[in-house]
Image (cartoon, rainbow, N blue to C red; front, side, top):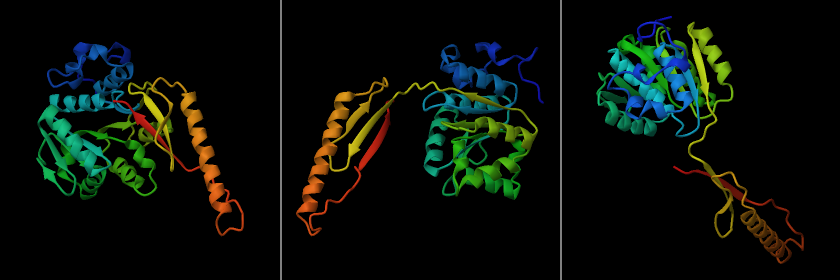
Length: 281
């Protein structure tokens, strides 16, 4: 196990302080590390010990800050880092964000290649797998690989791409896994430990900084019905209106069936609805 770049005694996650962050380049320092969440500090401590970490957190809960910290560390130590995402559109978006933050960032999606010699390369996971299969020289300079949306590994069709990419990564490369939800996080981390013979920490939080709003849209109805607000309060009035809509739909369907060619039979059909969940940013 490689020693942390912090001089002196290796620190536990709880002992990490603001002064331990990479100088100037650190995205977390510019955002005031003293105000970050505990799971971010724990993740940063794992990175500073040069150990892989899986961060499972809700939207806007700080996963991006952890990834940016890993990138800042690579820049500080004159190393290269790869950031992977499951979709070309997400790769393009992440490239713009990271380029604005760090400048020395390239993009490789198959359709577009920008600054392939940059210290930080953003690419789709398929591109990374192709580089591993070809034995690309770039990987000899890479210290960290960041896997965004790692829960895509459970996809029946594309999950093998993530699995093969992780399996064929050189053992000296450390990994950062980002996931909104991952039910088998501990099992996944144990697999990484067994596969690459290195620690892999699981950092989980159920903290949700962006509250959810739950709406129901009945097919053929007049509009959306808010049934659970951002404070997790059940909206009984709206729910009663929704029930009235369903009742009217059933009566209407029954009248249509009795007046049609069905010989008076009433067709039994379930209520058609669409459940929408919004995140307030």
